[in-house]
Image (cartoon, rainbow, N blue to C red; front, side):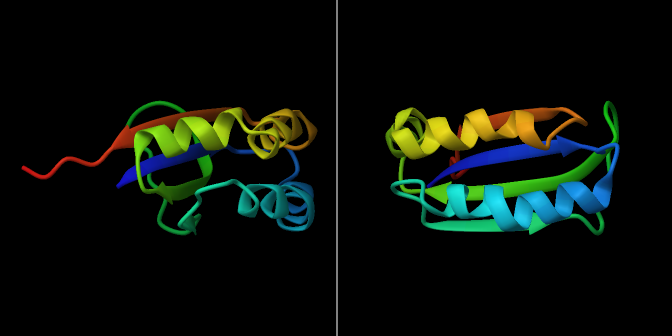
Length: 101
């Protein structure tokens, strides 16, 4: 399993962020090829060091190659380009494979 996490910093207007994310951005995300699941966390998001986070989004894919394919697809490019429309608190994107120990 491979994970793509998107960490959104606190926006200047949280209500606008929420409306835009739910109405415009999330539909773009849900169209990513190979996406198995998407989950969100706002309550209980705790930053131990660094930036003040507002929203954490976790997307699951079968493989790292599936993540790369999703990000380079037209749907992935559209979602990436859309970030400038609402993510004024900053955004960090992290991809990783989960490894059993």
